[in-house]
Length: 389
Ligand code: HEM
Image (cartoon, rainbow, N blue to C red; front, side):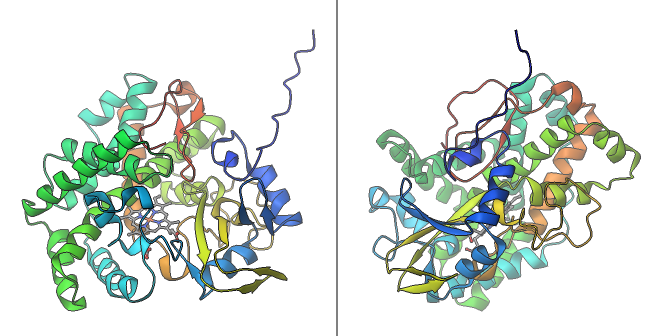
Protein backbone atom coordinates (compact mmCIF):
# COMPACT_ATOMS: atom_id res chain seq x y z
CA UNK A 1 0.00 0.00 0.00
CA UNK A 2 1.29 3.47 -0.91
CA UNK A 3 1.35 5.53 2.28
CA UNK A 4 2.77 8.69 0.67
CA UNK A 5 0.54 11.58 1.77
CA UNK A 6 -1.56 12.73 -1.16
CA UNK A 7 -1.22 16.41 -2.11
CA UNK A 8 -4.18 18.45 -0.97
CA UNK A 9 -6.61 19.37 -3.73
CA UNK A 10 -6.52 23.17 -4.19
CA UNK A 11 -9.43 25.33 -3.03
CA UNK A 12 -12.44 25.21 -5.38
CA UNK A 13 -12.68 28.99 -5.39
CA UNK A 14 -11.71 32.07 -3.41
CA UNK A 15 -14.33 31.56 -0.67
CA UNK A 16 -13.31 27.92 -0.22
CA UNK A 17 -9.75 29.20 0.30
CA UNK A 18 -10.75 30.73 3.67
CA UNK A 19 -11.19 27.28 5.22
CA UNK A 20 -8.58 25.40 3.21
CA UNK A 21 -5.65 24.00 5.25
CA UNK A 22 -3.12 25.74 2.98
CA UNK A 23 -4.63 28.12 0.42
CA UNK A 24 -1.40 30.06 -0.09
CA UNK A 25 0.19 28.23 -3.06
CA UNK A 26 -3.15 28.67 -4.87
CA UNK A 27 -3.33 32.34 -3.89
CA UNK A 28 0.21 32.91 -5.20
CA UNK A 29 -0.75 31.26 -8.46
CA UNK A 30 -3.74 33.64 -8.74
CA UNK A 31 -1.56 36.63 -7.97
CA UNK A 32 0.79 35.66 -10.82
CA UNK A 33 -1.73 34.47 -13.42
CA UNK A 34 -5.11 36.00 -12.61
CA UNK A 35 -4.60 39.21 -10.60
CA UNK A 36 -8.15 40.40 -11.40
CA UNK A 37 -10.71 38.10 -13.00
CA UNK A 38 -14.43 37.54 -13.07
CA UNK A 39 -15.40 34.27 -11.34
CA UNK A 40 -18.60 33.10 -12.99
CA UNK A 41 -19.31 30.50 -10.27
CA UNK A 42 -19.22 33.14 -7.52
CA UNK A 43 -20.69 35.89 -9.70
CA UNK A 44 -17.92 38.17 -8.45
CA UNK A 45 -14.75 39.80 -9.68
CA UNK A 46 -11.83 38.50 -7.66
CA UNK A 47 -8.83 40.77 -6.97
CA UNK A 48 -5.72 38.87 -5.84
CA UNK A 49 -2.52 40.81 -6.55
CA UNK A 50 -1.27 43.72 -4.45
CA UNK A 51 -1.81 46.01 -7.44
CA UNK A 52 -5.40 44.85 -7.97
CA UNK A 53 -6.28 45.00 -4.26
CA UNK A 54 -4.86 48.51 -3.96
CA UNK A 55 -6.65 49.62 -7.13
CA UNK A 56 -10.04 48.35 -5.89
CA UNK A 57 -9.74 49.66 -2.32
CA UNK A 58 -8.57 53.09 -3.50
CA UNK A 59 -11.14 53.47 -6.28
CA UNK A 60 -13.57 56.36 -5.77
CA UNK A 61 -16.47 54.34 -7.22
CA UNK A 62 -15.93 51.36 -4.86
CA UNK A 63 -18.54 51.12 -2.08
CA UNK A 64 -18.64 48.93 1.03
CA UNK A 65 -22.29 48.05 0.42
CA UNK A 66 -24.36 47.50 -2.71
CA UNK A 67 -25.66 51.03 -3.47
CA UNK A 68 -29.28 49.80 -3.62
CA UNK A 69 -29.04 47.79 -0.38
CA UNK A 70 -27.24 49.80 2.33
CA UNK A 71 -28.62 47.40 4.95
CA UNK A 72 -29.08 43.71 4.03
CA UNK A 73 -32.75 43.28 3.08
CA UNK A 74 -33.46 40.57 5.70
CA UNK A 75 -32.27 42.96 8.46
CA UNK A 76 -34.28 45.98 7.31
CA UNK A 77 -36.55 47.39 10.03
CA UNK A 78 -34.86 45.50 12.86
CA UNK A 79 -32.73 46.84 15.73
CA UNK A 80 -29.73 44.95 14.43
CA UNK A 81 -30.34 46.42 10.96
CA UNK A 82 -30.55 49.96 12.39
CA UNK A 83 -27.24 49.42 14.18
CA UNK A 84 -25.60 47.98 11.05
CA UNK A 85 -26.80 50.96 9.01
CA UNK A 86 -24.91 53.36 11.32
CA UNK A 87 -21.56 51.57 11.34
CA UNK A 88 -18.55 53.30 9.80
CA UNK A 89 -17.59 49.92 8.33
CA UNK A 90 -20.85 49.82 6.34
CA UNK A 91 -20.99 53.44 5.13
CA UNK A 92 -19.21 55.61 2.61
CA UNK A 93 -19.47 59.33 1.98
CA UNK A 94 -20.53 61.78 4.68
CA UNK A 95 -21.80 59.12 7.15
CA UNK A 96 -18.38 57.48 7.09
CA UNK A 97 -16.47 60.77 7.05
CA UNK A 98 -18.11 61.89 10.30
CA UNK A 99 -17.58 58.70 12.26
CA UNK A 100 -14.15 57.47 11.16
CA UNK A 101 -12.22 60.35 12.79
CA UNK A 102 -14.17 59.73 15.99
CA UNK A 103 -13.03 56.10 16.07
CA UNK A 104 -9.47 56.91 15.03
CA UNK A 105 -9.26 59.74 17.56
CA UNK A 106 -10.54 57.64 20.47
CA UNK A 107 -8.54 54.51 19.62
CA UNK A 108 -5.42 56.53 18.86
CA UNK A 109 -5.53 58.37 22.18
CA UNK A 110 -6.21 55.25 24.25
CA UNK A 111 -3.41 54.59 26.73
CA UNK A 112 -1.88 51.13 26.16
CA UNK A 113 -4.30 48.83 28.00
CA UNK A 114 -2.92 46.59 30.73
CA UNK A 115 -4.54 43.28 29.92
CA UNK A 116 -4.79 40.51 32.44
CA UNK A 117 -5.68 37.41 30.48
CA UNK A 118 -3.26 35.26 32.44
CA UNK A 119 -4.26 33.32 35.48
CA UNK A 120 -7.61 31.63 35.68
CA UNK A 121 -8.83 32.18 32.08
CA UNK A 122 -5.57 30.88 30.58
CA UNK A 123 -5.35 27.95 32.98
CA UNK A 124 -8.89 26.93 32.02
CA UNK A 125 -7.91 27.17 28.34
CA UNK A 126 -5.35 24.42 28.95
CA UNK A 127 -8.04 21.90 29.89
CA UNK A 128 -8.28 20.68 26.29
CA UNK A 129 -8.81 21.76 22.67
CA UNK A 130 -12.43 22.80 23.22
CA UNK A 131 -11.45 24.96 26.20
CA UNK A 132 -8.66 26.51 24.13
CA UNK A 133 -11.08 27.32 21.29
CA UNK A 134 -13.53 28.86 23.76
CA UNK A 135 -10.82 31.08 25.26
CA UNK A 136 -9.55 32.19 21.84
CA UNK A 137 -13.05 33.07 20.58
CA UNK A 138 -14.30 34.66 23.78
CA UNK A 139 -11.43 36.48 25.42
CA UNK A 140 -10.83 39.37 22.96
CA UNK A 141 -14.47 40.47 23.09
CA UNK A 142 -14.59 40.20 26.88
CA UNK A 143 -11.49 42.38 27.06
CA UNK A 144 -13.07 44.94 24.71
CA UNK A 145 -16.28 44.92 26.77
CA UNK A 146 -14.22 45.83 29.83
CA UNK A 147 -12.49 48.63 27.94
CA UNK A 148 -15.90 50.01 26.98
CA UNK A 149 -17.18 49.70 30.58
CA UNK A 150 -19.80 47.09 29.65
CA UNK A 151 -20.61 44.50 32.27
CA UNK A 152 -20.85 41.63 32.82
CA UNK A 153 -18.31 41.01 30.04
CA UNK A 154 -19.31 37.35 29.66
CA UNK A 155 -22.94 38.25 28.93
CA UNK A 156 -21.88 41.02 26.56
CA UNK A 157 -19.65 38.60 24.63
CA UNK A 158 -22.63 36.28 24.27
CA UNK A 159 -24.80 39.04 22.79
CA UNK A 160 -21.99 40.12 20.43
CA UNK A 161 -21.80 36.57 19.11
CA UNK A 162 -25.53 36.67 18.40
CA UNK A 163 -25.19 39.97 16.49
CA UNK A 164 -22.26 38.60 14.46
CA UNK A 165 -24.34 35.52 13.60
CA UNK A 166 -27.35 37.64 12.60
CA UNK A 167 -25.46 39.88 10.16
CA UNK A 168 -23.87 36.94 8.36
CA UNK A 169 -25.27 36.48 4.85
CA UNK A 170 -25.76 32.83 5.86
CA UNK A 171 -28.00 33.68 8.88
CA UNK A 172 -31.41 32.02 9.14
CA UNK A 173 -34.59 33.66 10.50
CA UNK A 174 -34.00 32.36 14.04
CA UNK A 175 -30.46 33.78 14.10
CA UNK A 176 -31.71 37.15 12.86
CA UNK A 177 -34.40 37.22 15.55
CA UNK A 178 -31.87 36.35 18.23
CA UNK A 179 -29.48 39.01 16.86
CA UNK A 180 -32.24 41.59 16.97
CA UNK A 181 -32.84 40.91 20.67
CA UNK A 182 -29.06 40.97 21.24
CA UNK A 183 -28.74 44.38 19.57
CA UNK A 184 -31.38 45.79 21.95
CA UNK A 185 -29.67 44.21 24.96
CA UNK A 186 -26.30 45.62 23.91
CA UNK A 187 -27.83 49.08 23.63
CA UNK A 188 -29.10 48.72 27.22
CA UNK A 189 -25.61 47.68 28.33
CA UNK A 190 -24.27 50.80 26.60
CA UNK A 191 -26.80 53.03 28.44
CA UNK A 192 -25.60 51.55 31.75
CA UNK A 193 -21.89 51.46 30.92
CA UNK A 194 -19.42 52.49 33.57
CA UNK A 195 -17.16 55.38 32.73
CA UNK A 196 -13.82 54.13 31.39
CA UNK A 197 -11.02 56.02 29.60
CA UNK A 198 -12.15 54.55 26.30
CA UNK A 199 -15.77 55.51 26.84
CA UNK A 200 -14.80 59.03 27.78
CA UNK A 201 -12.55 59.31 24.72
CA UNK A 202 -15.33 58.07 22.42
CA UNK A 203 -17.87 60.48 23.92
CA UNK A 204 -15.55 63.45 23.62
CA UNK A 205 -14.49 62.48 20.06
CA UNK A 206 -18.21 62.19 19.18
CA UNK A 207 -18.86 65.71 20.49
CA UNK A 208 -15.96 67.12 18.43
CA UNK A 209 -17.15 65.28 15.31
CA UNK A 210 -20.81 66.31 15.84
CA UNK A 211 -21.89 62.65 16.01
CA UNK A 212 -25.29 61.98 17.66
CA UNK A 213 -25.97 59.54 20.52
CA UNK A 214 -27.42 56.77 18.32
CA UNK A 215 -24.42 56.82 15.98
CA UNK A 216 -22.01 56.95 18.93
CA UNK A 217 -23.64 53.95 20.60
CA UNK A 218 -23.88 51.88 17.37
CA UNK A 219 -20.23 52.54 16.49
CA UNK A 220 -18.94 51.96 20.00
CA UNK A 221 -20.74 48.61 20.00
CA UNK A 222 -19.39 47.90 16.50
CA UNK A 223 -15.92 47.77 18.04
CA UNK A 224 -16.98 44.57 19.80
CA UNK A 225 -18.28 43.07 16.56
CA UNK A 226 -15.12 44.07 14.65
CA UNK A 227 -12.94 42.60 17.40
CA UNK A 228 -14.56 39.20 17.67
CA UNK A 229 -13.63 37.01 14.72
CA UNK A 230 -10.63 39.03 13.52
CA UNK A 231 -8.73 39.02 16.80
CA UNK A 232 -9.65 35.42 17.53
CA UNK A 233 -8.22 34.61 14.09
CA UNK A 234 -4.93 36.30 14.89
CA UNK A 235 -4.56 34.42 18.18
CA UNK A 236 -5.65 31.06 16.73
CA UNK A 237 -3.54 31.35 13.57
CA UNK A 238 -0.51 32.22 15.70
CA UNK A 239 -1.04 29.11 17.85
CA UNK A 240 -1.37 27.07 14.66
CA UNK A 241 1.91 28.49 13.36
CA UNK A 242 3.65 27.69 16.64
CA UNK A 243 2.36 24.13 16.32
CA UNK A 244 3.54 23.53 12.75
CA UNK A 245 6.83 25.40 12.86
CA UNK A 246 9.32 23.42 14.94
CA UNK A 247 11.61 25.71 16.88
CA UNK A 248 9.47 28.84 16.60
CA UNK A 249 7.94 28.43 20.07
CA UNK A 250 11.36 27.97 21.60
CA UNK A 251 12.66 31.05 19.74
CA UNK A 252 9.74 33.07 21.13
CA UNK A 253 10.39 31.75 24.64
CA UNK A 254 14.12 32.62 24.37
CA UNK A 255 13.20 36.08 23.04
CA UNK A 256 15.10 35.64 19.75
CA UNK A 257 11.75 36.05 17.95
CA UNK A 258 9.89 38.92 19.64
CA UNK A 259 6.17 38.17 19.89
CA UNK A 260 5.13 41.37 18.03
CA UNK A 261 7.28 40.29 15.04
CA UNK A 262 5.73 36.84 15.10
CA UNK A 263 2.22 38.34 15.12
CA UNK A 264 3.05 40.68 12.24
CA UNK A 265 4.30 37.79 10.15
CA UNK A 266 1.18 35.76 10.97
CA UNK A 267 -0.90 38.77 9.87
CA UNK A 268 1.00 38.81 6.55
CA UNK A 269 1.26 35.07 6.00
CA UNK A 270 -2.07 33.77 7.38
CA UNK A 271 -4.44 36.75 7.47
CA UNK A 272 -7.30 36.55 10.00
CA UNK A 273 -9.52 38.50 7.56
CA UNK A 274 -8.90 36.83 4.22
CA UNK A 275 -11.18 38.93 2.08
CA UNK A 276 -13.53 41.86 1.96
CA UNK A 277 -15.96 43.09 -0.68
CA UNK A 278 -16.63 46.21 -2.69
CA UNK A 279 -19.47 47.17 -5.02
CA UNK A 280 -18.95 49.58 -7.92
CA UNK A 281 -21.35 52.52 -8.06
CA UNK A 282 -20.18 53.47 -11.56
CA UNK A 283 -18.35 51.89 -14.47
CA UNK A 284 -14.61 51.66 -13.78
CA UNK A 285 -11.44 50.62 -15.62
CA UNK A 286 -9.15 48.43 -13.51
CA UNK A 287 -6.01 46.61 -14.71
CA UNK A 288 -7.32 46.61 -18.28
CA UNK A 289 -10.81 45.34 -17.33
CA UNK A 290 -14.09 47.21 -17.45
CA UNK A 291 -16.20 46.79 -14.33
CA UNK A 292 -19.81 47.88 -14.70
CA UNK A 293 -21.97 49.77 -12.21
CA UNK A 294 -23.33 47.20 -9.75
CA UNK A 295 -20.42 44.76 -10.15
CA UNK A 296 -19.07 43.27 -6.91
CA UNK A 297 -15.43 42.50 -6.18
CA UNK A 298 -14.06 39.99 -3.69
CA UNK A 299 -10.81 41.56 -2.49
CA UNK A 300 -8.31 38.89 -1.42
CA UNK A 301 -6.33 40.58 1.35
CA UNK A 302 -4.79 37.22 2.28
CA UNK A 303 -3.52 36.71 -1.28
CA UNK A 304 -2.13 40.23 -1.80
CA UNK A 305 0.25 39.80 1.14
CA UNK A 306 1.65 36.77 -0.76
CA UNK A 307 2.45 38.85 -3.84
CA UNK A 308 6.18 38.59 -4.57
CA UNK A 309 6.04 42.11 -6.03
CA UNK A 310 5.64 43.49 -2.49
CA UNK A 311 7.08 40.69 -0.31
CA UNK A 312 10.06 38.80 -1.77
CA UNK A 313 9.82 35.00 -1.25
CA UNK A 314 6.29 35.35 0.11
CA UNK A 315 6.08 31.58 0.76
CA UNK A 316 8.75 31.90 3.48
CA UNK A 317 7.37 32.44 6.99
CA UNK A 318 9.92 34.85 8.38
CA UNK A 319 9.26 36.97 11.47
CA UNK A 320 12.57 38.78 10.80
CA UNK A 321 11.40 39.86 7.33
CA UNK A 322 12.63 43.37 6.52
CA UNK A 323 9.76 45.82 5.86
CA UNK A 324 6.92 43.31 5.42
CA UNK A 325 3.91 44.61 3.48
CA UNK A 326 0.66 43.33 4.90
CA UNK A 327 -2.89 43.86 3.70
CA UNK A 328 -4.31 42.25 6.86
CA UNK A 329 -5.84 45.46 8.21
CA UNK A 330 -7.09 46.71 4.84
CA UNK A 331 -6.09 50.07 3.41
CA UNK A 332 -7.52 53.33 2.20
CA UNK A 333 -10.53 55.03 3.74
CA UNK A 334 -11.83 51.90 5.47
CA UNK A 335 -8.51 50.68 6.89
CA UNK A 336 -8.83 49.19 10.35
CA UNK A 337 -8.59 51.79 13.13
CA UNK A 338 -8.15 49.00 15.73
CA UNK A 339 -4.85 47.55 14.47
CA UNK A 340 -2.76 48.62 17.45
CA UNK A 341 -5.34 47.43 19.92
CA UNK A 342 -5.76 44.15 18.03
CA UNK A 343 -2.02 43.47 18.18
CA UNK A 344 -1.95 44.24 21.89
CA UNK A 345 -4.96 42.01 22.60
CA UNK A 346 -3.52 39.13 20.61
CA UNK A 347 -0.04 39.48 22.13
CA UNK A 348 -1.52 39.40 25.58
CA UNK A 349 -3.62 36.30 24.86
CA UNK A 350 -0.75 34.36 23.26
CA UNK A 351 1.73 35.38 25.98
CA UNK A 352 -0.82 34.53 28.68
CA UNK A 353 -1.34 31.05 27.24
CA UNK A 354 2.41 30.38 26.90
CA UNK A 355 3.03 31.64 30.45
CA UNK A 356 0.26 29.38 31.75
CA UNK A 357 2.12 26.42 30.22
CA UNK A 358 0.50 25.92 26.81
CA UNK A 359 2.76 23.94 24.49
CA UNK A 360 1.32 24.47 20.98
CA UNK A 361 3.45 21.56 19.64
CA UNK A 362 1.61 19.23 22.01
CA UNK A 363 -1.80 20.75 21.27
CA UNK A 364 -1.04 20.18 17.61
CA UNK A 365 -2.00 22.12 14.50
CA UNK A 366 -5.53 23.23 13.70
CA UNK A 367 -7.93 20.43 12.88
CA UNK A 368 -10.34 22.70 11.02
CA UNK A 369 -11.06 26.32 10.22
CA UNK A 370 -14.42 27.74 11.27
CA UNK A 371 -16.77 27.76 8.26
CA UNK A 372 -16.85 31.53 7.74
CA UNK A 373 -16.88 33.45 4.44
CA UNK A 374 -14.09 35.90 5.28
CA UNK A 375 -12.49 35.29 8.70
CA UNK A 376 -9.88 32.53 8.89
CA UNK A 377 -9.85 31.13 12.43
CA UNK A 378 -7.96 27.95 13.21
CA UNK A 379 -9.91 25.52 15.37
CA UNK A 380 -8.25 22.93 17.56
CA UNK A 381 -11.26 20.83 18.59
CA UNK A 382 -13.42 18.72 16.24
CA UNK A 383 -15.67 20.68 13.88
CA UNK A 384 -19.12 21.88 14.81
CA UNK A 385 -21.15 24.64 13.30
CA UNK A 386 -19.84 28.04 14.47
CA UNK A 387 -22.43 30.54 15.61
CA UNK A 388 -21.46 33.18 13.06
CA UNK A 389 -21.04 30.89 10.07
C1 HEM B 1 -6.36 41.03 14.16
C2 HEM B 1 -7.47 41.72 14.32
C3 HEM B 1 -8.10 42.56 13.26
C4 HEM B 1 -8.01 42.48 11.89
C5 HEM B 1 -7.21 41.48 11.07
C6 HEM B 1 -8.84 43.52 11.35
C7 HEM B 1 -9.01 43.76 10.00
C8 HEM B 1 -9.80 44.75 9.47
C9 HEM B 1 -9.95 45.01 8.08
C10 HEM B 1 -9.32 44.21 6.94
C11 HEM B 1 -10.77 46.07 7.94
C12 HEM B 1 -11.19 46.75 6.64
C13 HEM B 1 -12.37 46.10 6.01
C14 HEM B 1 -12.67 46.70 4.67
O1 HEM B 1 -11.99 47.62 4.18
O2 HEM B 1 -13.62 46.21 4.04
C15 HEM B 1 -11.16 46.49 9.27
C16 HEM B 1 -12.00 47.52 9.54
C17 HEM B 1 -12.36 47.89 10.81
N1 HEM B 1 -11.87 47.38 12.00
FE1 HEM B 1 -10.53 45.90 12.20
N2 HEM B 1 -9.42 44.22 12.38
C18 HEM B 1 -8.98 43.68 13.56
C19 HEM B 1 -9.30 44.09 14.83
C20 HEM B 1 -10.06 45.18 15.13
C21 HEM B 1 -10.31 45.67 16.46
C22 HEM B 1 -9.74 45.08 17.75
C23 HEM B 1 -11.13 46.75 16.33
C24 HEM B 1 -11.70 47.63 17.40
C25 HEM B 1 -11.02 48.15 18.38
C26 HEM B 1 -11.39 46.94 14.92
C27 HEM B 1 -12.20 47.90 14.38
C28 HEM B 1 -12.45 48.07 13.03
C29 HEM B 1 -13.38 49.05 12.50
C30 HEM B 1 -14.26 50.02 13.31
C31 HEM B 1 -13.33 48.94 11.11
C32 HEM B 1 -14.13 49.72 10.08
C33 HEM B 1 -13.32 50.92 9.63
C34 HEM B 1 -13.94 51.67 8.48
O3 HEM B 1 -14.80 51.11 7.79
O4 HEM B 1 -13.54 52.83 8.26
N3 HEM B 1 -10.72 45.96 14.22
N4 HEM B 1 -10.53 45.67 10.19
